Image (cartoon, rainbow, N blue to C red; front, side):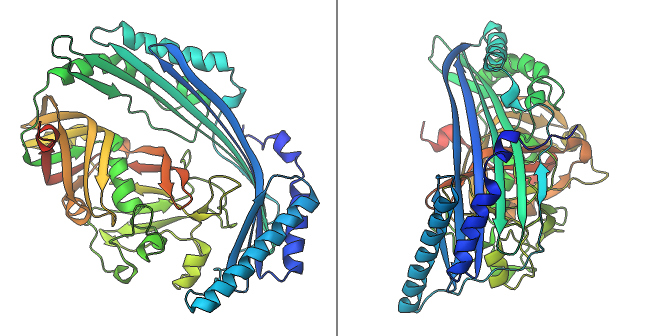
Length: 508
């Protein structure tokens, strides 16, 4: 059964506050105004060696008013849940817009703010796809499951320590604007993670291995066997894989064919495609926090991003996606669209202002704020590499490699300010010899430029290899904001990628 929006959220004076704020903004001459009331509850648990190490349970409740007045933005937020309080916040937003307009006129710089049009959505509701709201599950049950899983790892030979964590979020949002759109939404997401640590008593050398289960837009069912992940199987295999990793030789630097598992490839997509195709970056508007983009706007339709096997979509509609929603924070309906088609750059991620500024008819719904105290900024959709309809299995990809490496799980990464030069490591690396896995390797990092890496894409796995992975903590903007985002991808084969030995690179 689909869930309904939490009644305690609906009981808040949502429409009364929105009406007061929008009426005040209109009376002060705003060309556009929107109102957004949010309640975001986040709870986390951390265990060290099966014992509690920390927990938190916080709720962020407030509202924001954003206006366009005199061709300039104005924004203000508040927490007083009265019509007078909301009207006062709207007045502050207009005052800020007037001041901004004066500064722009005095400096002779800056474009007039105009927004791409969007249909009006009246009294609409959307709830994400999940079975059991994790906030209806007792804290003792959550901590108990993490402790039981930790104990399994600790009982295995060679495991010296085990860390466990769980983060859960329920996000409620009410939006209204002067065009007449009103939306009410509820999203649930969670991220469980366990890490086993091994220590060599003689040498003092240590290493770790983490679960590869991704964070998801699901509920408590994800941890109890009905949410698409086999926790028992993964926890059972980690100790032996970690013991093998401790004994594994370091990789010989050079060029290798790589079969990259989706549990690793998602992060490369995030950094080299997801961020690079945010149009505010490509235009230079997002330059202070993690840079701009090599995929500049003049290259739309022309840039050869990768091989013809590369097809990447932006998607705000994917079931269980972390960036999936019904409408964004500008009242734009969720959509799916192409970013890279047959290896060529064909699209960007847009909000309403950037869409209008660059000649697009419509935003594709990429405005988001992580709290009621923050202004919406252009944020990443679920950016995903499409599988080949009749593509091979992971085993078949491996079987076609004479000398290579199979990469599983994400770990560290580094990428330059334009999302072009990068290197990535992983949780597990397996040597491939004559089409077979031949034991693990250590100290592996793959390094390339974005276009060289995706240009080396030689085979894309089939739908059975596809997995929706992602992160809770994508950072952007100043003041900084974080957003949860998913990236789906199949296993994929890349030819002759440069491999570094990280220990040698560190001079050890």
